[in-house]
Structure formats: C-alpha cells, structure tokens
Image 1: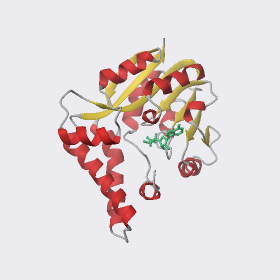
Image 2: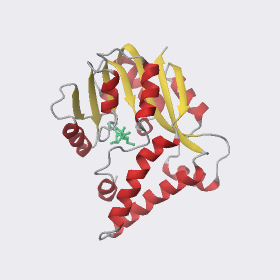
Image 3: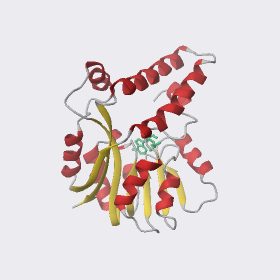
Image 4: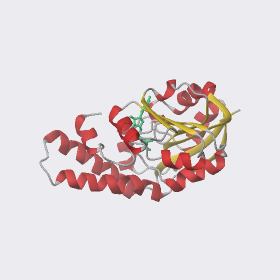
Length: 238
Ligand SMILES: C[S@@+](CC[C@H](N)C(=O)[O-])C[C@H]1O[C@@H](n2cnc3c(N)ncnc32)[C@H](O)[C@@H]1O
C-alpha cells in the first residue's frame, strides 16, 4: 500500500464493508458465551470491537492488524478498557485460544483455506470463525467488473467457490449470506466524503491517482452491486 492510500484511509471508522446489523447476524448464530475470548483478525481501526463486546460483555477482544496506525486508533478508541488488547501482529499467528475468530474483509490477503487452516488449532469452546470475503454473486459478470477484479483480485471466486474453500479447511458451514447494501454504504459513504475532502485541497500526482482508484472502485460497486459482494460466512471446524 502507498502513502497516498494510507492518507485516504487514515481517519475512517472502518476499512471495509460491514455494520452492526451484519455483525449481529453472525454473532447471533455464533452463540458465544458472555465471557468469550475473541480474536478480531485484521481489525483495521477497530469498528467492530464494540459490537463484539456487546455479545461478550465479560469477554476479551484481541485486536490484531499489521498496520501500526490502525492499532493506535484501536488503542485510542478503547483506552482504559481492559477487555481490549490491540497489537501489531500477524493475524494468522495469534496465540489464542479463542471462542470466536472474527475477520471482516481481511482473509483475502491470506486465502480462505489458508487462514481457516491456520486458525483451527487456536479455537476452543464455541469454536466459531466468522469472516467476509469478496465473491461473485452469479455467473453473469459484467465486462467492466470482470476486468476490474481480474486485476484487483485475481483469485476471486463465487459463493460456491468460497464455501468449497471453507470445507477444504475442514470446516462445516453454519450459515452464509451476502452483506446487504447498508454494510457497503457504512464503508463507502464516509470514504466518499474523505475523497471529496482531499480533492478540495492540494492534490499531488500520487494522491490524485489513489483518489481516482477509490472513485473507480466505489462507482464499480454502485453500477454492479448485483454481480459481486462480500460473502459473510459463519463456520466451525468439523
Ligand atoms: C479491508 S481491511 C478491514 C479492516 C477491518 N476488519 C474493518 O472491517 O474495518 C483489512 C485489514 O487487514 C489487515 N491485514 C491484512 N493481512 C493481515 C495479517 N496477516 N495480519 C494482520 N492484519 C492483516 C490490513 O492491514 C487491513 O487493516
């Protein structure tokens, strides 16, 4: 990621599609105990931590991200709350054990099968992994969207493909559904505002390029949201 990318993404509440309703959908299925130990894998600036703690009010969230400024944001957001530990670390190497591993929009860096396989020995108790992953919604793939994702995320597959990857890691699927549009708006509406704000100031070439890329991605989703989305999956090791 470039400096310009992080300038755009430095002050957002969340770093990918997701919202409280979609977290509640997964957590109601996960049925974690109120003292659950939870890993927020690839936590970004920590948008989901309050929701996770709502479902496990006597529990603990370990929030890991490889980008240090996001961890600073999590620490500021949850300062003084002993139920939250935030560290710069590889989410695949977390110690655990955890009742729940929550991973909003971050498994794609590692691959679904690879991430779930790495997490199996770190699960205990309710043993649930809940994640979201970019996927095609159907075989009808508009040329513009197919070209964008062929470059942006070549391994992108569809719902069945993601669910097969989950099963190849030795997991049973509890439930799966595509994130509703509101979850995308929870990310893209503030991102759109940030892009407009940065455009109103001095815009060096590298920033202009990064702003163009963000606008292309948002416009692509608005035009082709029926063709692709984030598949939200709740799964448990067999
Ligand atoms: C699309 S963002 C989602 C962030 C957050 N879950 C959210 O929904 O706002 C993906 C995050 O995963 C982090 N990430 C990617 N690979 C990682 C790894 N191996 N270990 C820790 N964090 C990782 C990135 O730094 C980034 O913050």
